[in-house]
Amino acid sequence: MGSGSKMRRKAKEIHIGSVTIGGNAPVVVQSMTNTDTRNVEATVNQIIALQEAGCEIVRVAVPDEEAALAIPAIKKGINIPLIADIHFQHQLAIDAIKNGADGIRINPGNIVKNKIAEIVQVAKERQTVIRIGVNAGSLQKDLVLDYGGVTAEALCASAMRNIEMFEDMGFDLIKLSLKSSDVPMMMEAYRLIAAKTDYPLHLGVTEAGTVVHAAIKSALGIGPLLYDGIGDTLRVSVTGSPLLEMPLAYGILRALKIRQVGPEIISCPTCGRCQIDLLGLTEKIEKALAQRKKYIKVALMGCVVNGPGEAAEADIGIAGGHGFGMMFKKGVAYKKVEEKDFVPVLLEEIASLDNEK
Image 1: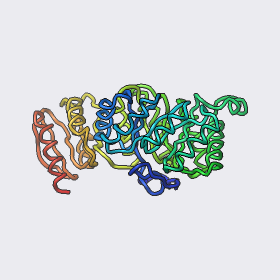
Image 2: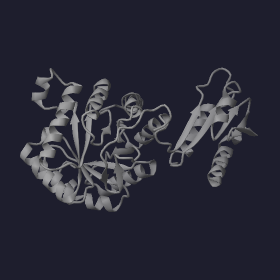
Image 3: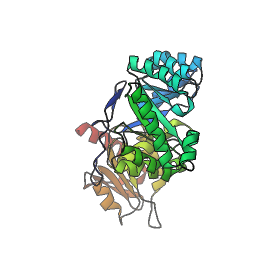
Image 4: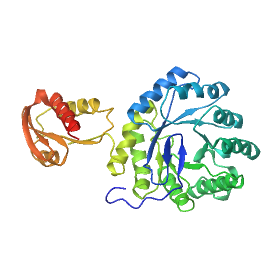
């Protein structure tokens, strides 16, 4: 954990394919495809794009037998572990495991107990991780009655009930998620379960909405939990392309100094003192560095008031003036650059920094 953050909760270590979760492993970034899983080519292409954007584990919907049968072909075309998302039909979970899924996600609240036992038996034989997903929208009716509605306490009770059931079946390759679109409820549910068990926790705010709403809800919901040391994997759910999730997920991790992956771009909000096209510059640099995995801190500042100080704190940066800017490199004023040359010179200097490391 970074400076200022608390000691991380030590979760039981599990392995999903080649990825370690819990223990001393870093917080893992996940996503989910929105393609038709039966369309192998489209699904593989989207997963490859997600891989390049930083996705470390991917989940696919398995709504029918044809989707389950597509898993082997999809796995051949990708390099990250694949999770099969199953609802209601226990046989699809069994088929997904047998077809090579590295893990499955089920909500035990919508599968009868004797069918869950069949899933667990196959998962035990194959050593396949099961994520127990508890959602506010599909909470068991008796718990809703017992707790007077859908509450954080009810979500936690559901998760503990499911854990006990799985452990009674001799199975402990478990990961947990307790999701809600209600941010305070989600946060409290994770805090409650984190105090009761050491199974790895997958963080997320479900049905978070389009990019702006998803960014706000996820930062406020996932961020404080991570800061307090709770959480082993995360997904920022966005309505639309899953590729939009990656910069938000890594942005949360970077902001908390938990994982320094990709570009951290600092740019001022602009004011009447700004004499360069800072928005255009920032957009071009963000786009140029979008696929970057290596961490770098880039400061793009619009004037000479706060600009030099902020730029000097970054690996590289520019503080703008009237049609020109002063470039700073590793805290030192480096050279004066004309505005028309900002983008190529910045990218050239970033490449030069990479070669020095």
